[in-house]
Image 1: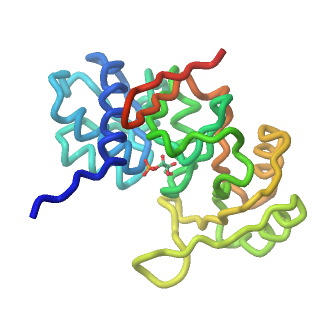
Image 2: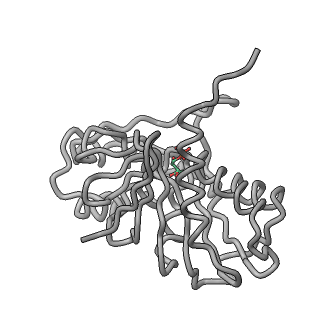
Length: 234
Ligand code: 5RP
């Protein structure tokens, strides 16, 4: 029996193929995490680009494994602290190109890699696009385990509702690649996202949160079943 192709996967692949057009021989490439980025890595591995000349800086263990299995050269951010371009996915993108990321739990390294990049290119299918971020997706907050209860109380004071992210194939919490836990925090109202980002990161014990300001983003490639749109900041 033939299986109907997964429409969302087709859109993710279309967005990834568009991003691949931006890759040039000799680049230091930051590589985000998630299922859309996995499509990008597969296309990168199969492309005519001379993979020996490209160094990929992964944002997670999952991405590192995927890069190695697709024949790509992997380096560390300490070896290559200036990245030419990073390609990453997102959980939500608003009309101004602010993002929520971290659905895959890799937000801390993703934000560091984004900040170290000349260009951050986001690839998404159109289900990720929203008018406003508030209420659309919980903001993942990466926290050292020691500070869980304290940070939860502080997030409640900010009118957030934190939920400890559970692991799916083990008992207990999701533990990030950095040995931390994640508090997925619902905010019904976010009037000033950049202020909230800073306020959350100022809580002792918080390592990073999944709000990514438009300042970091160069372009968002959005694939729908009909077309590809390239959104750039005005
Ligand atoms: C991981 C991320 C991912 O980019 C985000 O969760 C989107 O993933 P997917 O492409 O699987 O929808 O931020 O931390």
